Length: 155
Image 1 (cartoon, rainbow, N blue to C red):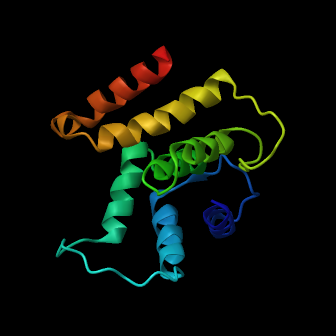
Image 2: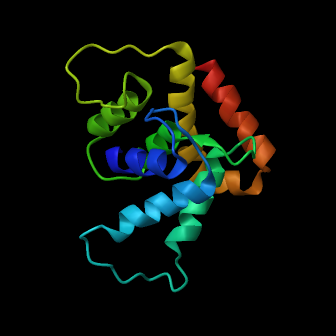
């Protein structure tokens, strides 16, 4: 989170914030830069034409429900949390921290989340869940967006 947040705010020339709106190109560029700095050796993939750039572009588009090429960085990071390793409680704690305070979930003080933040937090999880569901592939982007918004509002 820290690396991506620093890279995005530096690239966009804005003050650090958990709610930084980021465009697709900046998100993909920063993520590819982070991946290139990874010490992990590349794995051989059974997918002959796998493209990390295309995967990141599609991931971004899943969150750009209004199709304005702007998504808050904390929503993208919350969604990425679901796809990472770790325990459910550590993922939830990290994601919760993205919407409370300054983006650091390791604080010992009690944090609260407002209604609007909770809807955005829950919406991020729903977007990833819908993106991974075969049934949603046959739906239009507008329909999926409406399902996600309705479900988040009802929570």
